[in-house]
Image 1 (tube, helix red, strand yellow):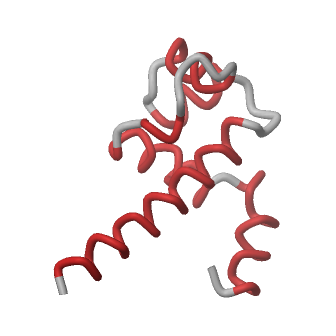
Image 2 (cartoon, helix red, strand yellow; image 1 turned 180 degrees about the horizontal axis):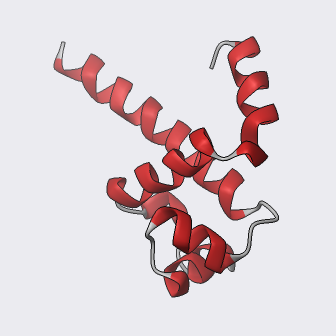
Image 3 (cartoon, one colour; image 1 turned 60 degrees about the vertical axis):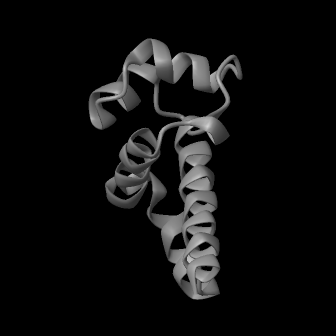
Length: 87
């Protein structure tokens, strides 16, 4: 049972990482992402240029990127495709 929960959390973390990557690779500027998420602009820049690995990000930051992904109109088409594909 305990392992099932661990797998579920890891699956959700992978999805959060994917959403964060979509946000970081979008046409939004680092400053815009920073303002929308509350993540420091320098940290956003470090994630974007690969000097900081988004896969090792704190859950709190991943949730902030995910919140932007879930609410910003720019990502609406991608969200719709996810819903159709059952993600």
